[in-house]
Every structure is written in C-alpha cells, then in structure tokens.
Image 1 (cartoon, rainbow, N blue to C red):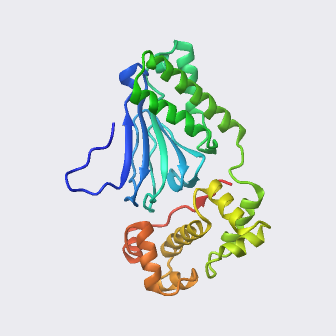
Image 2: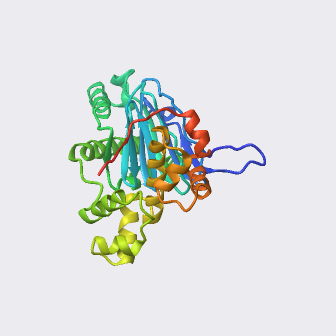
Image 3: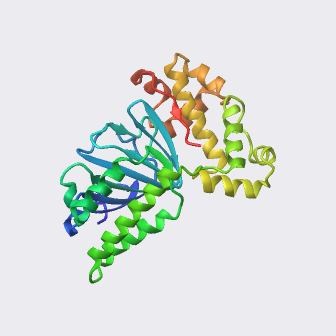
Length: 300
C-alpha cells in the first residue's frame, strides 16, 4: 500500500508498505520499500517491541545509531536493531535519493508459529535472525529478493502466500550467510580512497582526478566504482564526511567559525548553509541541543 499524504502536501518519499501477518506469515509485521525524493527529518529515538528492524540500503548512504555506536550504512549493507532496542538515524537528515527496504519481525513471541512454519523450524529461524550481526555487507543481489516479495503482494497470484513464505525463508538464509561470511564492503582500491578522504577532511575538498590518481584508476572508472560501493558519488561522500566530523568538533567545544575554518569551508556562511542541508538546522542550533556523542564506527 502507498503512503497517504495530506491534501496539498509535498511528498518527500515514495513508500510502499505491506503487513504480511495478514497472510499467515506470523511475526512478520511490516515489509517496506522507501525512496527518498527529498531530504527528510531524522528519525528520532524509538523501539520496536519484541521485534527486530532490519534495514537494507540499495542506494545512497545513511547513519544509524543504537546504544553506544553509530554506523554508516552504504548501498548493499544491512543494519539491524534488536528487539526493544532504542535506535535512530542520529542527527543527520535522511538523505535525498536514498533507497532502502526494511522489515520488522517479532522474533520473541510465539516463535513456534513463526512465519507459519513448523514449531522447530520457526524457532530456529527466529533465533538465527536474533543472532545476526549489527551491520554487514549483503551485496546487491538481495534487492531482487525484496522486489520479488513486493511483486507477490501487489499481484497476489493463486497460492502467493506459499510463494511468499518461501521467499522470506530464502531471504533469511541469505542474510544469515552474509552475516557469517563478513564479506568486505569495499575493494582495496576504494578502501584506499576512503582512507585518503579521511586523511584530508580538514583540507580543501579533493577533486575526483586527485582521488582517481591516488588509487591508480581513470576518473570515470573511479567515480563509477566508488558510487557502486559506497552509494554516493565521491564529492557527495566527502562532503557528508566533513559534516559528520563537524558534529564532533562542535560538541567538543569548537565554535562555528573555528569548525568552518578547520574543515576548509570558504566561510562560516558556506559552512552553515551546507550544514543545514544535511542536518536540518543551523550549526549553532545543533550545538545548543546536543551533547558529546560516540564516534561513528566505519564498516570497511
């Protein structure tokens, strides 16, 4: 089902949402596909009672936070919030052009009826989901699995409930394998480029040619390869990292002017304009409302 918006409002996302429990998939509360057509406000701290939330990014990049850590989740990666665990998207807005899927699954209650399977199979699959790693690379092939499940909901051919159950079980199996294998999210050359960006966050922004030369790739090949693995073009990734670092500087005591100068912005106004586009408020507003937060854990 599509998201319904108030008359006259401007949609910021294209959202498709289904409730599989209605079709006998006990425990699978929601299956959702979202495309952000514009930047949206951050998702505040919340929980899902007795259920995990599993988010799979297929385009772009997003920050997720839970407990004492934050993770940057890029295209092809999965992020998991465990049952009854407080989590959010932290301070940064949900980015424009991000595409993701998420499912909310009760893995605590009535697991002997989980997904309409036998008691033993249901309990085993629920336990496997609860045992998944927090954040891992699953690849882009998983997107087809989600798209096939959504197509079944839309078309509802004869016997689609059984087909859907098969797809969900296969999806869980694929997630378990990906979580165990811990396949690197980045090839060595892109990992080298990411480190190069990190080493120069406080300098003037790098251009694509410099980054490409550093990792011995042509500029077009580097740009395509970087985006396919991180979900963002090199320049956009670099800008986002500068804003993320600015959050840490501001809460550590840097003034807005000092932060802008440290990160190589041409002026405080330029920094404030860029900051607001990513965070949804001015640097001074953010500085007043936030305390020291843990550094982002980089999944590389």
